[in-house]
Length: 250
Ligand code: BV8
Ligand code: ZN
Figure 1 (tube, rainbow, N blue to C red):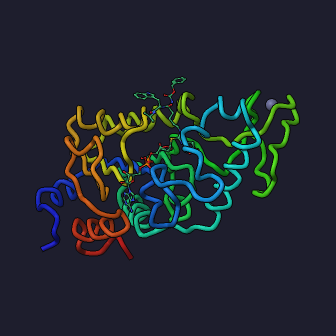
Figure 2 (cartoon, protein in one colour):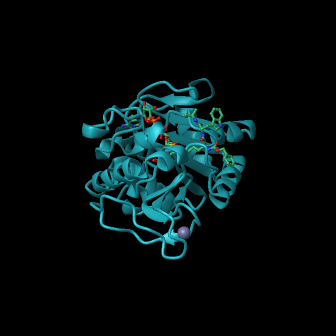
């Protein structure tokens, strides 16, 4: 007895195209706070969605820059967890597995995942806030944003802020994978931020099975097969149940 519904295991075994969509909850067991967790220390008085906006950066670039420098220091000290490793193993074995993430960390890559579609950018990349030209990574303790060599604009993290459009290529690839998916594995996301939260809806409309891995309910509950619990515990067990020959988690 695996504790998983036999029809779920059968559908996963038969699936050719699987879309894996991850959010902050996938990195929670690595020690990274989610957007729902209260922020620590001097950032406790801020809500992430109040700092992650072009207006906040225009109003007070130093504070927003320092928040991202703090997050870079925190991100630099954490390692992938069992959920990231299970996803990397799944991708390695299943050519039809596509990985889309809202996370701006690099834990999927550190776990060995390839072709990770980052819908909201990467906290480790920089660009000019004025002309958009890519800018080099700088030491994570630099207190003020450097200036752009070509236009003198301020350096900002190459992430998607609220109110900004997603990178077109990444969104197109994600929406296509959702349209074509047999199964969507929605891992550790509250499914509240759009348009990322639209992906399982696109897939469901196209006939896919939605499997949600989350210890708490989300708006996706009503259309998903819900597996309640931490991703780092459930994903390895699910993979071992679907592929008992252990081909996956060596
Ligand atoms: C845009 C990068 C227009 C920056 C981020 C329609 C309806 C309503 C609102 C909107 C709408 N359309 C657009 C909006 C506005 C907005 C939006 O969706 N707002 C929400 C708050 C209502 N969307 C936007 O602004 C988007 N842009 O629409 O632009 C446009 C279009 C064209 C041209 C010009 C403009 C841009 C959105 C992207 C913003 N950037 N991040 C940074 O990181 O600093 S969003 C950021 O927050 C993350 O990337 C992620 O997307 C989101 C957090 O969500 P989750 O990852 O799901 O994390 P969360 O903390 O919420 O939940 C964690 C979950 O994990 C929980 O459910 C918890 O139970 C679970 N969990 C905890 N532990 C575990 C676990 N699960 C498993 N295992 C565990 N161990
Ligand atoms: Zn510039």
